[in-house]
Image 1 (cartoon, rainbow, N blue to C red):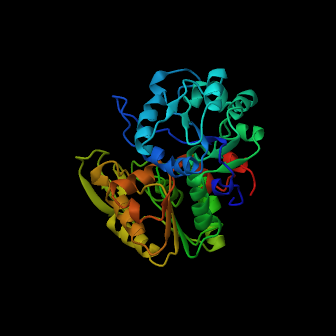
Image 2 (image 1 turned 120 degrees about the horizontal axis):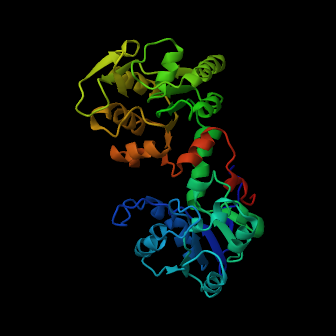
Image 3 (image 1 turned 180 degrees about the horizontal axis):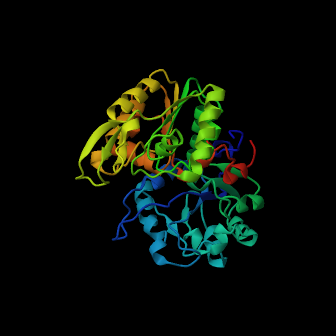
Length: 396
């Protein structure tokens, strides 16, 4: 996947560069941005293009307007924050295609920045419509994709447009994502330990199947562990089990055994009478979860076991929390694992919405080698899939 054309090897001076960014940032009820991490993530690419005398055209989606002009999803809200972060003027186009936008793009001078309106105001964006793709391509001379978070989607601005430009390369954020994925999954330094958590086994079956071929040890946590325990015949209390996944998790365990991959499940849990911060709690061995209780977190013995497993790891890949960390009372297991990974002498890569939230909440993000910006895209890479937006880029 690394053999793609990248921005540092592209001739951009004086050229109109269409840059697909991911400015899909969260807002509060007052239309204020609550987290601008994704905007900041695009700054290295934007600044490099400005420094090299390019004419920069930025395109993104925001929210799910479903092909309609819903102004609460207007990227004008992002324009002001971007201008402040760059400390320079950012022009704004009230649409992303059409004669008015083409005129604005044609009038750009070296170092100018034009932010287009939300791509998803047009249903053709998500439909990967060829005509819409061509209209986007008409705005520019070269195409750069720096939106890893949407790389698993074959949309007009991520895949379709590449068929109508001479060169399609990746920006610095995309380049970093690809490089770290290669270093952690495709060509890792061994031993490799994968930590797979989250609520549902069904969302991680393909991840397990792919990782067993690539890693040395797998740690399992979160609600999905109970589907494994049910398959082993244990009492799982009131914890959710996906009955239709029992055969699949049995096959995963068998494949791991056949491949010599060590598989670690929690050995104890924090159990509660109900999922409530004020509920009575206690720690019990994994085989002794009370019939009417839930287990929203792994216990201290599991944390100790998992920390020992990480001890000699040279590469650690993490996707999915260990429990319901959103409630303080049930966050100890996930937070302890964040610290264990953060302090490991290994290349550490984490991804998936809840995982990065937990890492930031623990204040340990600086100690991770890399935290992926793509939830679904990161998951699909872990499943061994080819991402259409990356496949569409020009080969180096």
